[in-house]
Length: 185
Image 1: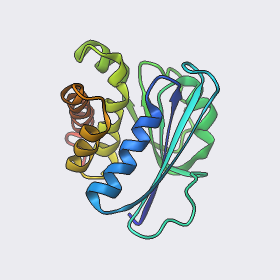
Image 2 (image 1 turned 90 degrees about the horizontal axis):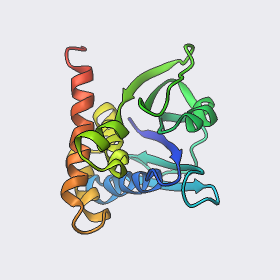
Image 3 (image 1 turned 30 degrees about the vertical axis):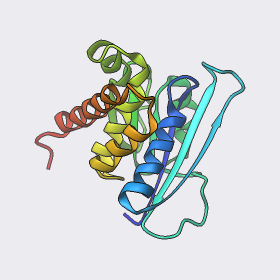
Image 4 (image 1 turned 45 degrees about the vertical axis):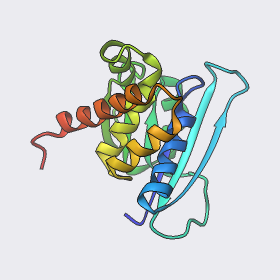
């Protein structure tokens, strides 16, 4: 794929901006691709709208904003409601299944229901790594960067002492996608 436009959306405090930064870092520094990352968030420290946009390309990137997303990640119902219209027909939609309860039936995209917050809370004991579970799922679904590049970027980007937990969260996201797509040709 010559260029992939990704929009990661959610609420402040869910780590959507960090997720975008890590994805861009993995592409540029570890996979040798071009990447541009932009972000936007409301004035609230937590709970307001947050968005991270990443463009990953094998060639030069002419425009860094994501107006029509190939991949849309919604980590809250509000985020899905606000950004669903920016997803291309035939694109890929990943939702945090525990926080996004209503997906319109007429969505013209491949839909992946990822229980990121539930897995982060219950399996890993830290709700804060739900963004890393979702990053693993994005890479598992779309292979926009290599798994090795993603893990290296995570290790470089998270606070010291949390690397193991964050890598475990990425691996859980990858395994969720593998389990969901097992047997699909």
